[in-house]
Structures are given as C-alpha cells and as structure tokens.
Length: 79
Image 1 (cartoon, one colour):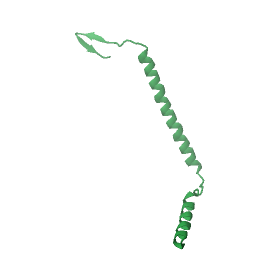
Image 2 (cartoon, rainbow, N blue to C red):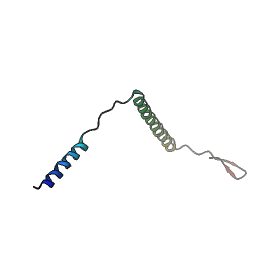
Image 3 (spheres, rainbow, N blue to C red):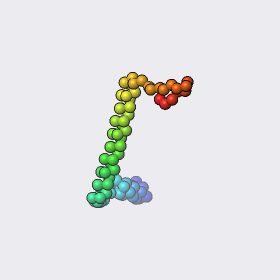
Image 4 (cartoon, rainbow, N blue to C red):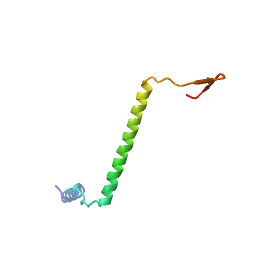
C-alpha cells in the first residue's frame, strides 16, 4: 500500500468518524417544551373534532331523514 493511499484512508476514516458522532445535546427550554406540547394537543383536538363531525354527518345521512321541500307556485324552495 502506498503512502498516498494510506493517508487517504486515514483522512477518510477521520471524516467518517466526525460525521457519525452524535451532536452535542443541548437543553430544551421549558417554554419551548410547553409550546411544542400545546401545539401537539391543539392539533390532536382539531383532528378529533373533524373526525367526530364526519362520523356524525355520515350517521345522519344514512339515517334516511327525508329532505324537506316546500312547493309554492311551482317553485322549489330550500332543501
């Protein structure tokens, strides 16, 4: 093995070892953690409300409730 290949291999190992090491852990501030948790809870609540609304809409649509149609002078008004 030539000296050039040996140096290239050592440099490659050092560069790979540098990138593989985990980054230094930094503390998360309390307000940041509370904000992230609050946003997550809000998103879950919005998704839950949408799902519940869609389920109720499907149940009322499949219940077979008749549409109310008013006829006056040959004109259909409001459904």
